[in-house]
Length: 142
Image 1 (tube, rainbow, N blue to C red):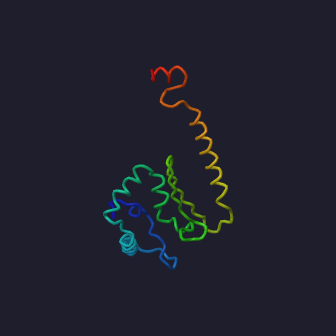
Image 2: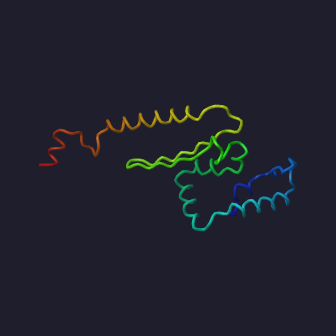
């Protein structure tokens, strides 16, 4: 476990299975056992480091110790992850349904899709490589 990890900073020990607060020593032993079960294989450490460096908010959101208490995690029916790759983009999407929620995930998805479509349209209108067409493009070819 990394020194000064997220669990080490917790001031209050997490509740035991029966809902009681654990003593500092009991919490430490339970914490160590939990970390041992979740140990990252050495070959995956560079990937974890790159993920954290590039997308710290995603790393923290998905690695939160209490994530499973607030959200249904895969393989739950309404939670899933998708990775799609095209010639232009890589889409990585994680959908986690909040426990007890009745709403659909289509609303946020369509909102993000509309925003992405708008950005693509604006990008298509922008000149590429500083060329605006016409004389500039033909001058470079002459």
